[in-house]
Image (cartoon, rainbow, N blue to C red; front, side, top):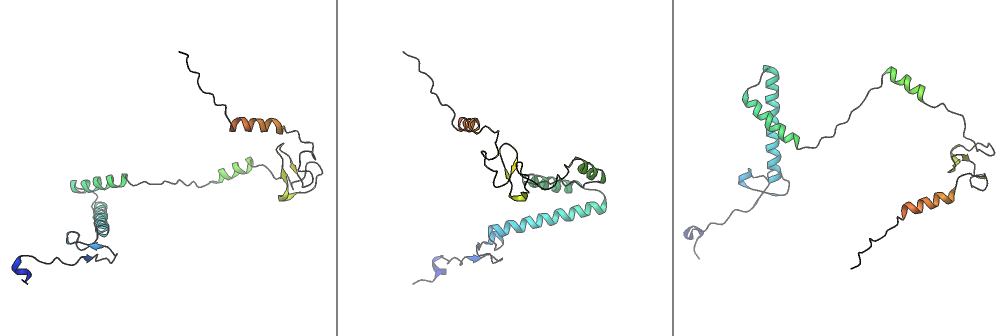
Length: 171
């Protein structure tokens, strides 16, 4: 057999792994890095340049036209990134006094409307708007004035709207 140099054929180099050991293959065009690591490196370099020019502007108190170009190109990149803004307010002394005046005062322990028994957290709120104990929680036990029948009809009417097809014109 002939040697590879005699035929002009050279064996290609084995694929190189990324120099950051991320597990992907790198290339000479990206300085032996994978595309992801290469983009991150370029982004870090741009951020470092931007930070250096910002510090230089603060120290010198002015900016040159070159710095404006860097800032303008950086502003375009920042506009494409979604930013969530949160506004926090610090309550002042006047706000706390207003809140205290508008808060409803505690009426004491919660009690059953019928027997006045203390119910605490185990009380049952009826649809008529009153609070009842376990014995009086049913509508027939406390003479409830709420109209369950019409409420049921309204719920069914909302859930099942009437669907009618348009009439066809007779030929």
